[in-house]
Image 1 (cartoon, helix red, strand yellow):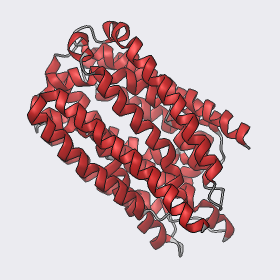
Image 2 (image 1 turned 90 degrees about the vertical axis):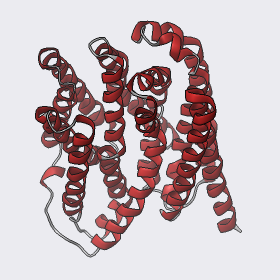
Image 3 (image 1 turned 90 degrees about the horizontal axis):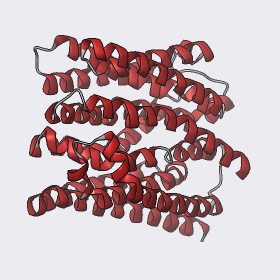
Length: 398
């Protein structure tokens, strides 16, 4: 069992790393050469908003489907999720219209329409890819991500002609979606209601609140910094975090695989929790050291305009991301075996701490103070998550 889980983790890391590497190490650095600091910072901020809204909503539906799938199979029922997808897409559409107008204004109609389309497809793809997770088919996920990358490449060619960076993501998600439609019947599932709809809807809401708070912690840096310090400083900050995020995004698929397997386990498993914690700590430690050593030569190639300014923040921003990754690796255990409300409490407390620490220290130490505040908030989240799982488990065993 552990060998199979380990193999799937490696396969999912490879699958997820491909689009991450292509975007973070090739496409986005290349875009910085065609944009000034303010325009690039604006794009990075909008992408942060996309990761908080459509990406989070789609991922929540994906995870809720995983957590409830065995119950549906047991009763030989199918339905509800097409209804939920429609409801959440409507909410997503309203938010995307607001975000698009807020950041792009009302004159850039083409940019607004492209951004809204990206948001809608992003959510749908994040949910529908659950078809492969349900079957533990990580080879299909790899193929899907290759389709995604192919779309990015085609979109980049169009960007060179029309200047709209949104087209890169749009074509990526279109090709990814086409693969899902061809390889799985999930898109054609019936638009029907079952007796579980209320329960699944409530779980989706609780998990959505929790995950939005969690994603806000990870992406609030750009969203907060843009109006406070401007697009150019966001570009510097992004350059300071990009390499460590590439390393971390190659690790976080462990989270996805863990929840997929945990969804099929009914008893709490301390041994697997400890194994995940130890392996995660070692991998994250190695990732941190690699980031510190390799950041300057890598950033000199990727972001030569920002490398000198970015290097002074590397050791803090890399530490923040490493702590965040380790937390994400143990979160599935709390998510699987305890009430979803625990996640809301954990992420709510962390979000409050993040805002207090980062903004207070921003006033005292500028961008450096902001970075220290973000690190402190993420350390608090790791400690709380660990405490909740171990404390609650020990009470149950007693």
